[in-house]
Amino acid sequence: MDGLQELRDIWVYLSASPLLHLTLTLAAYQAGLWIYERANLNPLLNPVLIAVVLIVGALVATGTDYNTYFDGAQFVHFLLGPATVALAIPLYRQFAEVKRSAGALLVSVITGSLTAALSALAIGWALGVSRDSLLSLAPKSVTAPVAMGITEQLGGLPSLTAVLVIVTGISGAMLGPPLLNLLRIKNWAARGLALGTASHGIATARALQVNEIAGAFSGLAMGLNALATAILLPILLGFIF
Amino acid sequence: MLGYLTLILVCQLIGELFVTALALPVPGPVAGMAILFAGLVARGGIPEDLGNVADVLLKNLSLLFIPAGVGVMLHVQLLQREWLSLTAALIVSTLLTIGVTAAIMAWLRPGGPEKGE
Image (cartoon, rainbow over all chains, first blue to last red; front, side, top):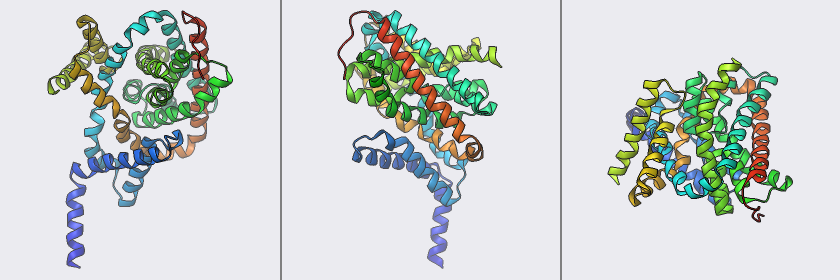
């Protein structure tokens, strides 16, 4: 019984320290990556999705609430801000290409950005989705750190947005390439730009594996769409609500 | 390395201050990205170590979504009610966005189309 009590004391100590949940987050991601790589980068086995499932399972099994978990995980979460700032670097690396097709690029990404937000709102509204969920759904095509910032400003639920963003990324990476083949769009720049606009970093990671031009345009579209949505969506919603 | 990490944080900090002071509808880190981008344009290049710091952050971008993703725990009831409509809206909207964006870009892009798959 003494040993059991000791174990329990250690658990109480560990579960109150940020170290445990920080480690859990990193370990679950490593496990997710391992499975994803073993499955030949199958987009269905997205490492983020696997990690989230593993962590939620562990938290539910140990009766730990989200706030306790987040006390540790916030150190990882914090880095989303600096990572967003760092998107300026890939954007700058493609600057020459950007300038060359700047007009076409801007028109495509802005139209895509409006399509993403308005179609999600319209379909969600038609299917009877609640107001909170609609506000959280609107920035779903934007990279997570920015989408969560936008939702926060709109008064939605940032943590719900994070989930919807991840599912959007996975579905675009999976279904986008076959759709583009069906539409007979063979231009790598157009393919990459569309994937990055609709499905941010997760589709960009996928595009980079297939073709360098597609990857560059996808990353660029992700950055531009983040900027366009952050500026346009609050204005747009001002008219709607 | 540390100097450039500090530079990135400073850009974010200035971005946050800028957005708050002017009540702009843009998240602070996005303003920070624009500030850093403007700095790179003014300088005319990327310092090697800054590129390395950014690559480390962006290579592990997926990891950074996890704490927020685990927040799905907080919305179990809402998702039980709305998951089907949310998923439908999300997938149809994503496919529509891919089709529209690709079609416009392929149509408007200067220079002939490159060969793809």
